[in-house]
Image (tube, rainbow, N blue to C red; front, side, top):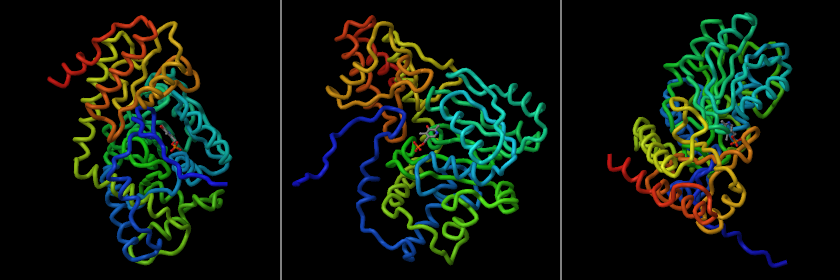
Length: 393
Ligand SMILES: *Cc1c(COP(=O)(O)O)cnc(C)c1O
């Protein structure tokens, strides 16, 4: 055996995540490892919680990163809030709502499904009907930014509806955090989870979460033990909770947390509103280019995510061949369709560090080149200029 070090190519990541990682984050992660109870690391943890509160726009005490990817943040919310026999209203308008159902059932709860078409926002009227028909429901769960389709739901309205009917809320903000307006405390969200690798532009593997005082009350007064030892917040709080003394729960992924800290510093320095605006501006330029080319958006205007652009694949075009050529010739990754939309759409991400003019123009030029080269029926040579016009204002 004489194995070699792994040297990945430098790609431009414009899919559904992971997104391009800011080099400042990668260099932060290469700094010396310290012990996970070292006083300097404990200080970093405190600062991290403050930075996460800023990102989530909340003052909730229990705000921290779960030491695992977004899916584990999802599971942390469900296993702590849902007990056997509980009824949960789950909104599904894409892949991730389906995973919420799976979580509820594995906790021994009953999921009442509210279905909407893939590519559409969650319909608040249907949620209200479900709440009226299920007065014993305990939680309403929905995905704020459905990465599988590119649809954004009205979190503020859905949370208010849930509260009016005495329900807590679990919100998936994996793709919205940092990319679209999200005000956890003002909107009254009870349990929220996100991911490090989407609009925070960090490496994958960490899941910021935040819980309201009402959610903590429910967790502290459970009738049964949380089924997962690792995710039981009653135990995790001993490590991440209160200031001062911290006890060992698990070894925190130290260097990964350096990276998330740097990502959050970058977000704070930019200003979260500026980050939201930047995602929107670049989305508008990308949209102008894609539409000039003749591609159409899957999600109706007004329900679109700026950070995840789903467009229909033109008729007769080989999905895998196009994505393969983009990767091979341009080192550019765009996303394929998922579930019901597999083979029908491309998902072009503009997340975090990757939401910039260079990426937008590069992607449009590359897509134009590949599609034109294959003889696809698109308008060639106009996309980049259409995007430039948006930037010129
Ligand atoms: C990416 C994503 C997840 C899962 O996050 P992982 O880090 O892949 O586990 C969950 N929900 C949404 C909406 C996502 O986009």
